[in-house]
Image (cartoon, rainbow, N blue to C red; front, side):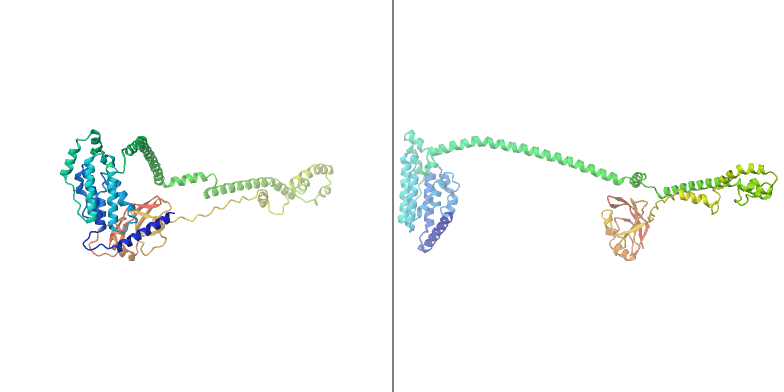
Length: 501
C-alpha cells in the first residue's frame, strides 16, 4: 500500500513537472513562483501589521525566489509559517485539478482570505475586517489585472487602532495584540490552546521532577562507580608493586643460597661421591679386620699341634703322644711292639685317641690354611656392590658472542656459541659465579673496523675510552667489563676499558 502511494505521488510529480515545462511563461511576464511570492509577501505584511509587529517586515525576502521567502518566515514568531503558509503552500494539495497559473493564483488568494476571515477576534473588529477587505481587493486586482499590490501605510494602521479603542471592552479584549498569534491565522481557537497548555503543564509537572531525580541518581551512581574503579586500580597497583619487589629481592639474593637449600634437601636421599668412597673404605677395613681375626684364631689353634709332632719324631720311645695327633691310622701297631708295659699303653691310648681325633678334624683342607678363612668369609658374606656415581663433566668457563648492548643490557637471547660477522663483544661465563660475567671487545680485526665506524652505537654504552686523534684500525681491551645477571638479562655493572691503535 505504501509503495503504491509512493509511486502515485512520484507519477503526479512527474506530470506536474511536464506540465510546467510545457507551460512556458511569456517574455516579460512574471513566473508563477514570482507571483506567489508577491501574494504571500502582501499577506505576511498584513498579519505583521495586524498584530502590531511591523518591525518584522524588514526580514521578508520579497524580491527573491519562493524558497528564499519561505526561509525568511521560518522564524515563525507570529505562527505565519506553521499555521498559514505550510498548510496551504507547503502541502500543495489545493492546486490539484487546476491547469492554468491564473486559476492557481485565484485559488491561493481565496484560501488565504478564507483562513484570515475564520478568526472570531478579527470578525468582531470592524477596523481589522476593513483592512482585510483592502488586502483581498489588492490580491484580486493583482491576480486579475497584474496591478501591483500596495502596502498599507503605518498611519492607516495607527488610525484604525485609535478608532478601535472606542469599541466595547469585550471587542477591545478580543482585538488585543495578546490575542494575536494562533487566532490571527484563523486555524486555532482559544479552547484548543488552553487544552494543549493544560496537557503540557501536566506532563511537565510529572516528568520534570522524574527526569531531575533520574539525572541526580545517575550522577550518584557514576560517582560510586568511579570510586570503586579507583579503589580497584590502587589495590591492583599495590599488588603489582609488591610482586615486583619480591621478584627483585629474589634476583638480588646471593647466588649460592638457592644451591645450598637444594643440596640440603637432597643430602638425605643421595650420598655424594666422597661419602660413598668413605663408606667403601670403612667396609673394606671391617672386612680386613674380620679376616685377620679369623686367621689369628686358626693359627693359634694350629700352633700347639705343630710342637707335639716334633717330639714324636725325636723320641720314638714314647709313642703315645706322637701316634695320636698327627700320624695316620697306620702307626697304631707301635704300642704292641713295646713289651715293656702293655697295660700302660692301653690306659694311655684309650683317652688320647678320641681327643686328638676331635682336634684334627678341621685340619685336612686341600689348600693352604691362609686362604681358607678368607674364602669361607667371602662365601658367608656376599660382596657389597656400591653404586658407581656418574662422573660429572667438569664445568669450564664458556664464551658467548653478542653484537651490542641495548640500554646498558646484553640480552641473553642474542648470545651465540660461535662468533658472527657482527659480534663485537665476547661474554665470558664462569659456572662458579653464575650471577657474574666479564666481557671484552673481540679480537677479530674485521669487526674492529665496523665497531670504530659506529662507535656511538656499538661502544659508547659498554666501554670507556679516549677519543682517537687520528685514524685507527684496531681496538685493544685494557680491562674487562663486569656484568651482573638480572631478570634473565646481563646488566653492565662496570664498563670495559679500551684503547684504539
